Image (tube, rainbow, N blue to C red):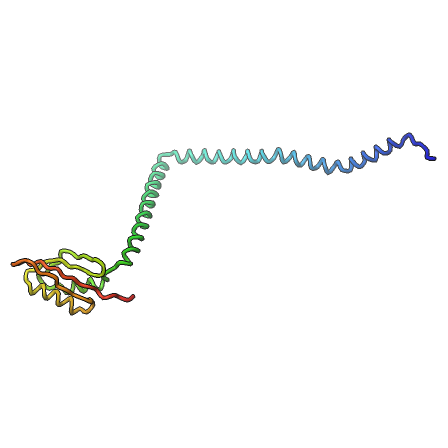
Length: 186
């Protein structure tokens, strides 16, 4: 038979308390760290916000000075001008890209036309359509107009040269000259 021990419940409860007391320091350390974090993190955030607000107030005071207002106004004006120039640059780039694909006359060919102009011949306008260039102008002598057509033909850089018309009975004579430039391989 087993003996009954009246102190057994007391002995068992103290063993449980000993186990709890051994776990307790770790739990206590965690609780203390939690409360420190709860107190310190908001304090740090509040301190940072406070310092940032002070810096902003100092900047506002500095920027409210008349000298700084003038400088800021100039900067804003320049920024607007830069944006406008950037937009124009984009537009010009697109126009240049489009024109590069449709270039009828090269600079060299334009110089050849100018070099072929004899005395008393004048060009009113150049019209480029497709691969043909129409030159409209006037001259004081029909022979000078014919010489202009011959000079362009002799240059050898045009595929076709046609003196389409010479109008008027007396000077000045208006003329239309149609030329087709040769393709330039770049």
